[in-house]
Length: 315
Image 1 (tube, rainbow, N blue to C red):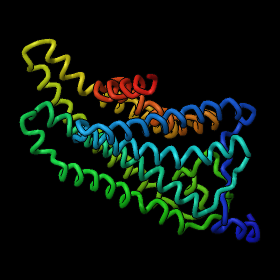
Image 2 (image 1 turned 90 degrees about the vertical axis):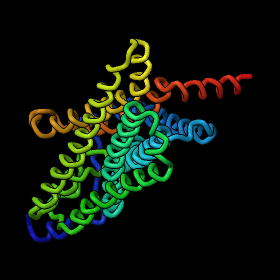
Image 3 (image 1 turned 60 degrees about the vertical axis):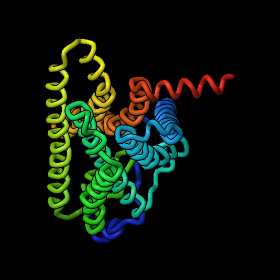
Image 4 (image 1 turned 90 degrees about the horizontal axis):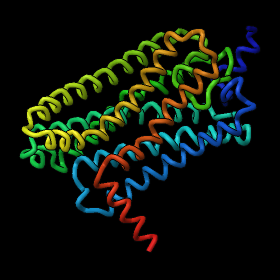
């Protein structure tokens, strides 16, 4: 590349989000799917926040953590979907350089927060089932607030190098990103510099955060299952396990797509680009849509409060 062309892309003022290459003709149907998932996620999470706020008997650690997850999901939705829909509907592909870095930071930062909240939820279920008489004294409001603050600080501080490192690289190849949003490595790979620092940090952080959270969640549930199977009756075991079912379902719908997406990017070199892009977006959007549905259907207290609100509105 000539020096004149290279200088055009050094620290570009904008990036071009290519969307889903090869599926442009299906944008109308894809946009309907994405918009539906976005609407369900936003309405579902706002409903959970409203119900928990209105019901004093739900002001306990389990539902505090659930509200934190709802807020995290809402921020992720707002970070991804508006720009994606502008690409589908208006072919508005340009994104400001700083806006791209901000979007990258928010997406990865709040994803890390979500993983930390899953761990906090697992700890809450462990204390509630294995130490029920001490639950209220262990998980006080002050402790819940400290856990929430730790989750936020962990995400904010550990992900801060992403935009800081990405900002310092010179960009002299192209400013076209083959995706609907500014994913970290998709942006960094456009740099004409040695990006091993960003690459190694990204991989190490993904393994450290996800690995640590999954490990401690697994340890919590091993202890929970031991406590459940030690209960004297089948009904008691079923009832106790039911209090964990929604959390387990949410963990599965969150980590399994993430693992599948990670493996496809690392080993699926023959997979078409549009499949990679679709999977990268489904990895975010499907869990964000399913979280409020799962908690609404499988959590008795929320289900009852929601039905009561619907009945009151209908009368």
